[in-house]
Amino acid sequence: MTMSILYENGILSLGDSRVRCNISYVSSATMQALICNVWAHRLAGGCWKAVFLPYSLNDEYVEAFEVHAHGPKVTLICTTLDGIGYDHGEDDPVAFMSSAIHVLARREQSFCHTEFSELLAGIRTFCAVGAS
Image (cartoon, rainbow, N blue to C red; front, side, top):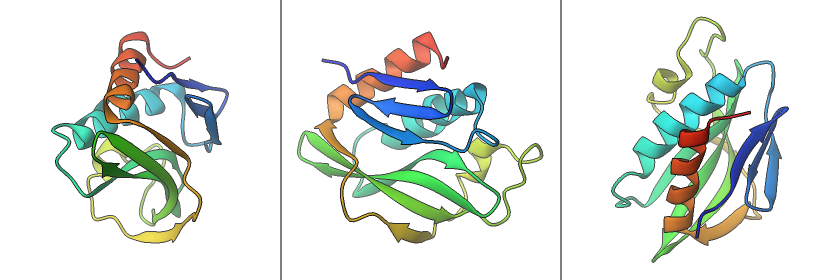
């Protein structure tokens, strides 16, 4: 089964869960780059304790999913990361997210739970089809 991943009008949907993105900084092309380059690369291999998948950028902070693996399942939690130093229009968001990550805030409630294989299949489908 494949998790549906859509990005349209500043809303990122993963299955039935949705989150708003900063549309001033996150165009469809930027979201495509984040999901297809950063997300796919960080999840490759599946051997990690926690990984951050950015979904919204700002010049002061980055909003990202913190992903934790539990056997074949993963939990996504919304976090706010330090984004000081990101300059929209000047910096490559993919390269910026390769720098050190400092968590500023973490929501207590998880965003969603899914099978790891469904999340990967959703990313592959999104990358094949593209953002709206």
